[in-house]
Length: 355
Image 1 (spheres, one colour):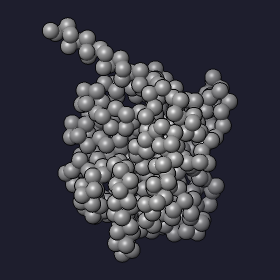
Image 2: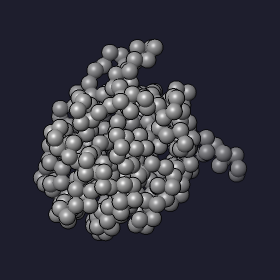
Image 3: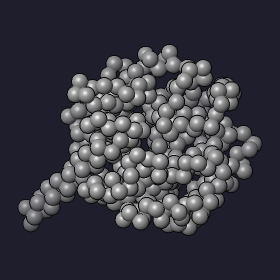
Image 4: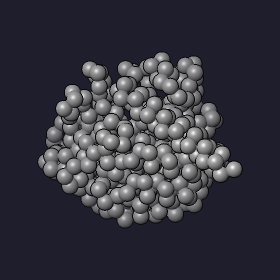
């Protein structure tokens, strides 16, 4: 597996110089953040981003994300032009030898939390989701905003797009996703790009909006939409585990068995009451996910793709983008790398013993 790290560009307080010093770090996961959703990413802008990353001895391994315009998710007539733009962006990324694109099909909002600065007893801070608090949150009339969300909406526009989803239930959203997949995957195959859909985060309905990439059955259904390595998943164990009904290891092993895990997100969470959860340190003892079993599965299925430590806590007095500080994610990367090294060596010893 290839260890990677999320970087938000030159405005990110976590620098490429910081990232390159993390043991085992090979790649960067990034994007171009100032191009309006739905417009083509110019190849020269992609080239500039790639050069910046490579000048620090790293590889631009994954683009996360190329956002999908709401008109595509809603199935509006304007989707034809927007999908054509998306296809051209795929071609432009491939022309710069960028081979993995992460995206999601979540209506309106990407990942959702109810507190970005929850304090643990040890003084560290983390993102949490409290189910009861979420029921009282109002994304239209409140001040709710999270990093990664599309900030281009006015309150009026957000109200309008949320209202539009009253006509789109889960089955209609699946239909619109299938249309999108059947349009873009042939282009991805043609230019050698692997698409990687991210699960809904959390994997259940929020604010009355439909969510569909939520569990094992959803992954099976999604992969069957277009049977190709180019149509894969970003297997975020933390997202799937956020619903206590899910077994993230089972979902991971299923997707690996079909050779359709194109990108890995390793985040640990601690489940609480109902569907509440807290993000936590990466090691297994702190959360509800057995990270040893995650890395073991990747080894057994010979996964060679990119993996990144996902959201981390803020520790040692660090401030910055919630969930994306340097220190805890760096600790997570070295922990994951150490698990992998141990599993590799453990299995090498077994092979020697068998001789």
